[in-house]
Length: 107
Image (tube, rainbow, N blue to C red):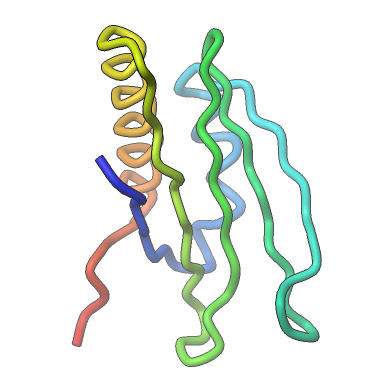
């Protein structure tokens, strides 16, 4: 499982933290300046048990009204840890897709 990317309508963005919380995640949000003026990256940490899934999102300059979310890769050395973290990543990705997240972008 590699990095996942999902685009989501800006209108659904505010629902992400509560939707993840409803699915049993402890959610922490922080913001950092982006690579260009006026761009802010939002980082979200979704914790369930001992594992944490990290997300980051930013607006897309060329597609107003769309936010791009990066869902970082989860892995582990031990097979049972790897399976648990893969499931965590899949659950977070599914929650974002429930709110309208999609990939690949339409042509």
